Image 1 (cartoon, rainbow, N blue to C red):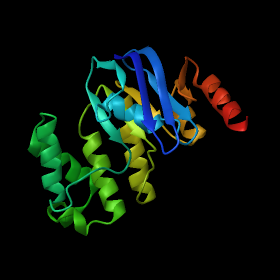
Image 2 (spheres, rainbow, N blue to C red; image 1 turned 180 degrees about the horizontal axis):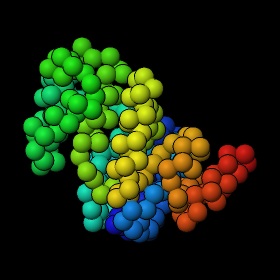
Image 3 (cartoon, rainbow, N blue to C red; image 1 turned 30 degrees about the horizontal axis):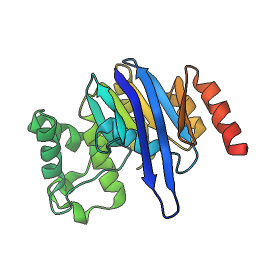
Image 4 (cartoon, one colour; image 1 turned 180 degrees about the vertical axis):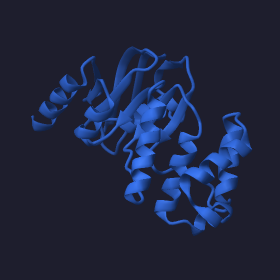
Length: 218
């Protein structure tokens, strides 16, 4: 379960203070699949960052009664002077899981061959994406935070990646940010619409999409 208790967040711009979240109180039960919708700059990624604990709210609190992933897509933040395997081992230690087991999983999943033992600075963007996605799928979380997931690689790798991701979601909750309403409708059952600092929760994701599209058209 994830609880928002009177959570507010704003940023200072050159001309004013922009409110992205104003006094949000909401409880998301375990297993809920929630699509986060809103125009550019509405605060979608900021919301995920606060749930992950890497962005602090101005006031209020977020309680996580579960393990929560970092905001993931098919990309990630790495130390470029470390090898792929070293980056994976570092992440495994942070989350308290078996380092060898995670390296083996990612090596098999990402299919990077000898590049697993080469520095990240030698990777293409696609190779980094494969490493990041393999690493995130190698750890079982109660909640997955997803910011614009986009499949990369050949058709076989895309198919495998999405199959593994959907399998992970069978027993986990999801908070997904995407500009594609088709993607939101494919993965989510509920919706959270951000507009002018207000967040409205909808049990039916289709209603959330309709409200978001009306906001965009206004």
